[in-house]
Image (cartoon, rainbow, N blue to C red; front, side, top):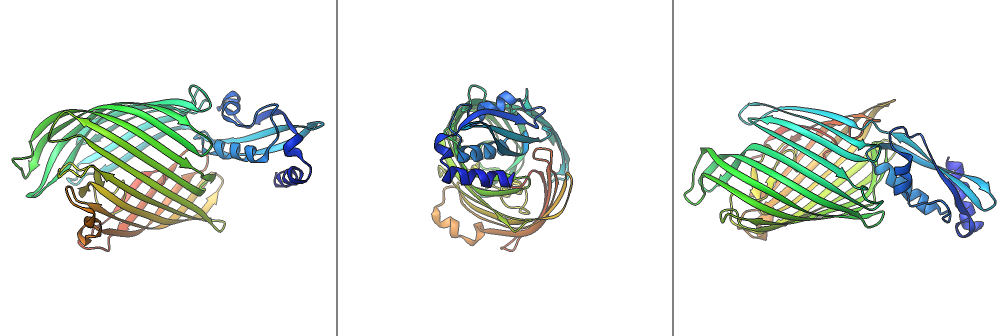
Length: 419
């Protein structure tokens, strides 16, 4: 394949193929569940168009981003004079993914979450899934995401969940535990501007129900209240990532802006926005350096229900479950991933990481970001057990050890890479 690509590049530059040669036909091979018509629908190269190596390479990158495809490459063969057949060869993922998470809460309560998702429904890369969770209380959710439902650029997503958890609320007098239930319905329109840029625009109607369970109280904070909210959401993503099985290289920027309208004064209307800047680089044959910088700000209300949480599963591995909240956040996660063992479908990957972050206190100022009490640094190590032919089949174990003031340490389990 490499020889064919080299020959094509030479011909494009010296033989004028990019100007004169046409695509006689596009053929897809190796796909079993993913529909050939779908692959041709989203491909930018079309029958009768000018043969352009840049377009073909972008098509391959686009295909490798799909949940249904583990790997892809192209070949070009001459058909007639100034006409060429383009072959896209596909190596597919298994895309019906069940998952089971078992863990304990701070009160040593047994908890679990079971889920299943089909990422390639009807061979069209439509993702449909649901979950059930038992974590002191029962929760459930369901979703559908069809990014190419209406065309090769336009699709939709719908999400519904009823999530009930026991949430700590941080007051001046101490900590209170609330039973928190969030029931939501969300509709999004998905639009791909071009190969690297896409946007999502939607609305989320949800209800938040807080019920005081135990801990300190404050006369200004109600023990029980129920509030309906309306959330308007805009997501913009720049994606220039290139995948080669477990290895990733390139830059991705994902930004999320939300405006929330509330019907309860204790939870006022607010704006929130954050952006993740992720950079990946191949190191040698078996290494991968990965980094993520998150910058976020929200309306700076002096409220115990601030939106940005300090949490094991979100930003700082080893710090604990929702140990603090803020109205602003700066977090940097960086890690080196190295393939320790690879044979057939199985991959064992090790990683060494450093997670660090700081928060703005509710009602505080930007000086809070430099306050040592808000600053946390957690280095650590981890393992990844990966299946090469199952989408997102990455079971991770990380151990983070805090080195800043009053730090903790802990193990974090999960499915998929941390970022």
